[in-house]
Each structure stands twice: as C-alpha cells, then as structure tokens.
Amino acid sequence: MKVLVTGGTGYIGSHTVLSLLEAGHDVLVVDNLANSSRESLSRVQEISGRTAVFHAVDLLDEPALREVFARNSGTEGSHSRIDAVIHFAGLKAVGESVSQPLRYYHNNVSGTINLLRVMDDYGVRTLVFSSSATVYGESNPVPYIEKMEIGANNPYGRTKEQVEDILSDVGAADSRWHIALLRYFNPVGAHESGRIGEDPLGIPNNLVPFIAQVAVGRREKLMIFGGDYDTPDGTCLRDYIHVMDLSEGHVAAVNHVAQKAGVFRWNLGSGIGSSVFDVLHSFERAVGHELAHEITGRRAGDLPAFWADPSAALADLGWSTSKTLDQMCQDHWRWQKNNPQGYTTA
Ligand code: NAD
Ligand code: UFG
Image (tube, rainbow, N blue to C red; front, side):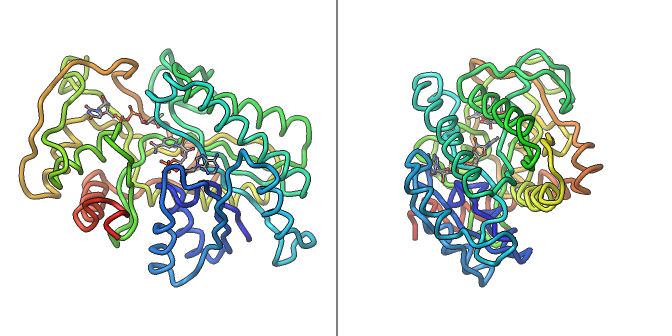
C-alpha cells in the first residue's frame, strides 16, 4: 500500500514509518515540524535503506494538503494513489492544553477535519487515528476495555474524544470509510539501533524521557509525583508499551482496516501496570547505577492506576506486545546515551 503518515517525523510517527517501510509499504510523510526534526527521517532511511517522501505541510493549511493528495491521485489501486492515512499529527502536552485550549482544539480537531475533507474529496477513506488512553477519563474501573463510556478530563484528552466522535459520525454516515481508533497507553523506548527515539522540546513532561535526561546528566534528579497512592509501592501504575510494539500495532491495524469497512476501536497496551519505582529501577539496571530521585507532591490530574485490556487487538489484529519493561528502558537509554541532545546532536 501507499500510506500517508501525518506527524511522521515525530516520536511514534518516525518509528511507524520505519515499520511500514520494512513491511514493504510506500510511505509519504506530512508534518509541519512543530515538534520534530527532519533528521528522524534521514535516520529511518539509514536503518531501512528505503526513503519516505517528505512534505513540510501543516494540516491547517488545507490547500497545501490538497496539493499533496492531488500529486498522489492516480486511479484506485494504481501505484501512485494514496491507499490509507495514519494520522499522528497533533499537539500532545496535557498542561499546555489547559493553558492554550483554543490552540489545541484548532490544531487537533480542525486539522483533522481538514484532513478528512481532503481524503473524502480524493476518495481515500482508510484512516488509522492516534487516540489515547486518556479518553477513558477518571471514572472507569481498570483494566480499560473499548466498550466503556469515554470522558476525558483535560482539553488535550477532549480533542482526542472529539475526533473519535467525529470519526464515528463520519463512518456512520458513509459506509465506505474504514477507520481505526487506536487508544495508546504509555509509549516509551526507541528502535534498538539507538538511531531514532523520543526528542522532547524543553523539560520533559513524561516519566521515561525525564529519567533518561537525569541519566545523561541534563537534569539533576527525578521528582516522583506522589508516593502515597493506594498502590503496592505508593506510586502510580501505568501500562508502558515499547514504541516498536506500538508501531507494529499500526501496521497490523492499517492492514486490517484496509480490508474491512467500519469504525473500530482498539487499545494498544501490554495489560501490565508498572509503578514509577518499577520504571526507575528498570532504567537504573539499564544504566548500571542508581539515579537521583526524590518523592514530591502529587501532580494535578494524575490517576492512581490504569492499564489496558489488550485482548480485542489480539483477537482482531493478531497483535500483542512482546517487549518487556527492561527492553523498553535499555532501548530508550541507548538512544539517549548516543544522542544526549536528541537530534540536535546531529
Ligand atoms: P510528537 O509530537 O513526537 O509527534 C507529533 C507530530 O505531529 C510532530 O512531528 C509535529 O510536528 C506534528 N504536528 C503537530 N501538529 C501538526 C499540524 N497541524 N500539521 C502537521 N504536523 C503537525 O508526538 P508523538 O508522541 O509521536 O504522538 C503522536 C500522536 O500520538 C499524537 O497525536 C499524540 O497525541 C498521540 N499520543 C501520544 C502519546 C504519547 O504518550 N506519546 C500517548 C497517546 C497518544
Ligand atoms: N511522573 C513522575 N515524575 C515525572 C513525570 C511523571 O513521577 O517527572 C509520574 C506521573 O505522576 C505518573 C507516571 O510518572 O504517575 C507516568 O507519567 P507520564 O507523564 O509519563 O504519563 P501519563 O500516564 O501521565 O500520561 C501519558 C501522556 C498522556 C496520555 C497517557 C495515556 O502524557 O497524554 O500517557 O496514553 F494520555
């Protein structure tokens, strides 16, 4: 297939571009480079020996997006035509979404509407969307299953929920659409080569990138947000998933929905809850020594514990995770150690 990947220079996108190229698909990338670097695709090319065609386009610029589809609009089934879109492009910082809600709704929701309009006009109606476990909100019991009522508790999460609603309505109105809503749990790790990985701008919001920057000497110590939760060691439990398992989940999902019309929802997680201390100790094993840390107050909005029931993805896609928390930390550390300043090192 010829797959257009929005947000394909970003963290999960670049790993998925690699998996798609390795699976033999042709890949086009659209990204405005708001939170990423083109260097990621050069590295993907170096690893795979294949090239993804890059377009520096913002999804909010509908004419520019239309031009990309116009240039790839051969007859159905022909080599030049886009067969499917995997849509990663979006802003993702929860705290920033609270202070800049309009920017988040505009980028994530309006950007997606532009994409859907252009896809529809060009008859490309197979879409895989990056949703998030955050749509399950605060009131569902764990493990999360796809049929639960959703209700996010922050603007970022509500952009995901709104896009899920829009896609459900689009699929209900026109049976020619083939749509996968993928609810990711906590993606971490990097390709085992250590050549591509997560490269957050500024101070990392997320646990593993923060620990990695402590390990490489860019931050003094990890602040653990809360040690008094009702969990086995007092810290929050999350379902960490290796980014390569996640990227392979996208390949499985796009292959599946390409053959099957409708709107499908799948959790992509391991089904295992790991604590902040589990992650810290695993990362320390990867590095080979202890890392400075301190327990501080809880972070507003954090849930004590959540993880996926990943059985639907196994049953429908034949997909499940294969990599352990130790592999996630080893691979994340290899990337960080070899690229202490991320892609800017290059
Ligand atoms: P990322 O920031 O590394 O990648 C997103 C990419 O989208 C970036 O390259 C950015 O430049 C691009 N982008 C943003 N707005 C755009 C626009 N208007 N037009 C074109 N390009 C645009 O983030 P990621 O971690 O790879 O996440 C990918 C997707 O997965 C996002 O939609 C995110 O919300 C979702 N997600 C991420 C996580 C996570 O913890 N990383 C968890 C659940 C869901
Ligand atoms: N944590 C710390 N210190 C830090 C960073 C995080 O103790 O410096 C703790 C958090 O309190 C939480 C755990 O580590 O208990 C994981 O935190 P992350 O920020 O890495 O991940 P979250 O589960 O809070 O959220 C992430 C994304 C969300 C997404 C969610 C589910 O940031 O956008 O995973 O996919 F919705």
